[in-house]
Figure 1: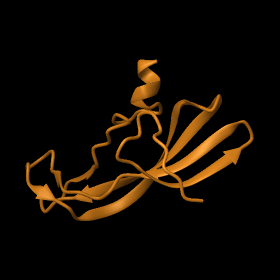
Figure 2: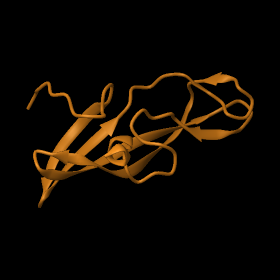
Figure 3: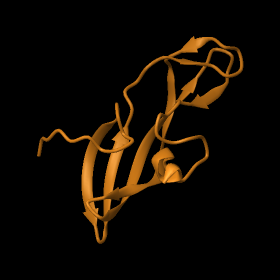
Amino acid sequence: MNFNMNIPGLKGVTVHKVEEMGERIVLHVSIPKKEHQCPACKNITSKVHDYRIQKINHLKWFERLTVLFYKRRRYVCQCGKRFSEKSPFVDKYQRFSKEWNQV
């Protein structure tokens, strides 16, 4: 099913799969790959180390709770530091989206 719909707080995010699990809507999302700056040495890198899946609670969508499964990239730098990509909809170490925290 192909459709265009703006989901609040998820601008610039790629939705891979939408599922209904009981009373919840589950979205599998990721962000397009881009270069990031290393927090240790400040060099620019685009080399991906691995991926992690992060479960995030999001706003209600069609009066149902929404859960995001975010495929977060982890980058590796020449200095050996590994770090996660910057995300526009969730802060570091958080289980709730920025939109959820604003409400």
